[in-house]
Length: 206
Image 1: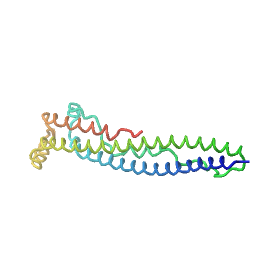
Image 2 (image 1 turned 180 degrees about the horizontal axis):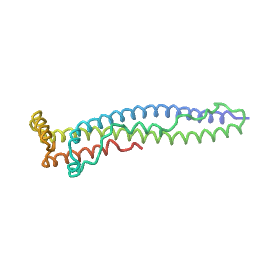
Image 3 (image 1 turned 120 degrees about the horizontal axis):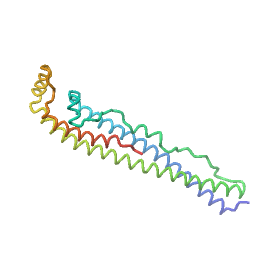
Image 4 (image 1 turned 180 degrees about the vertical axis):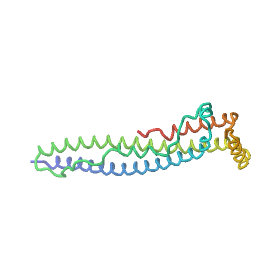
């Protein structure tokens, strides 16, 4: 025989489980949205880095070595791969009523174990949510600084814009290098900036 008190306590515990399950589903959807936003920001960042570093294709092997250009910019967001590691939302269904006191106690233990498991998953999602926010903000701030500094460097490399490009293409036509060795200081500075932003953009979520 199950007393009204025991049954009321069990139903209250069951309601807590239901509420936590809803929280888990909602939190997971929110984190998926944040991960997609992070992937978009990552892709934009990598695309910008790649565009800004296009002139590196004109560097000779020796110039690349002297400017310490060892990186490659691949526009493949790493964030999307982290979705496979998201905690699952599926949990076994638990009956809201029991037929015996023994069954009630067994179900209570099961519910308590499931509540503990859901709380662990919620904590994982909370950490991932915070990490996405940090990564988005870091990439935006890094790109603000990168755009400012790379603009200054680009004006030093191409002070006369189209005429500077024509001059450098003319050098190539006459068998000379596109960039002079005096340009390598600016190329190296841009490379250092790119490496720093790449480190942020390619850092793992988990």
